Image 1 (cartoon, rainbow, N blue to C red):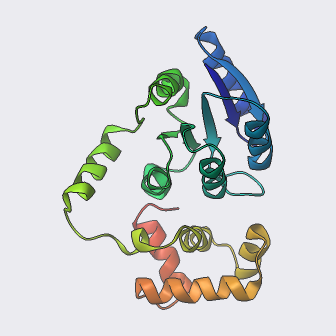
Image 2 (cartoon, one colour):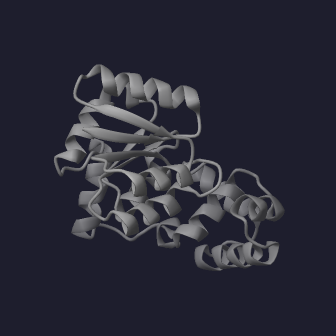
Length: 207
């Protein structure tokens, strides 16, 4: 199996590469950011992509969409330091084949890659239960689950204490655009201030 690992931390890439190649079943190449990953996907054939969701430049959600447009059948395993509550459901709905927290990666990486390459999905038991409940229509969605991907990212960044200006710089958008997203968040979530948004992300383990 030929696998591309995209992560902006060289030590993480090297560690994951070592784990994967020690299995004797996987050969690995590396990409330091989303754009390099997309370039390598255009240049060669791969059996799977392991993608960090938080890298400089294009966010993992944007890269995931671009990968899906470029190679719709390519299985993508999202690797993240964030808890499942923050991104797992969102990336699976966006077309990822699995979600893995970096804390579990050493012991589970090879099994996860094998599973998605063979057409399966890699998710934890907790996440599987949440997906089953959603399919069954149990309960209403929480306010943050109704947000668009971009609105959700702005919420998380506000929850991390970043200013409108910092968010605008990081997302390469205007301050006015970010202010509009913030206003939409407050309206959709029936909240009144940044302090309310920050409290929400803490109460729901999103930050």
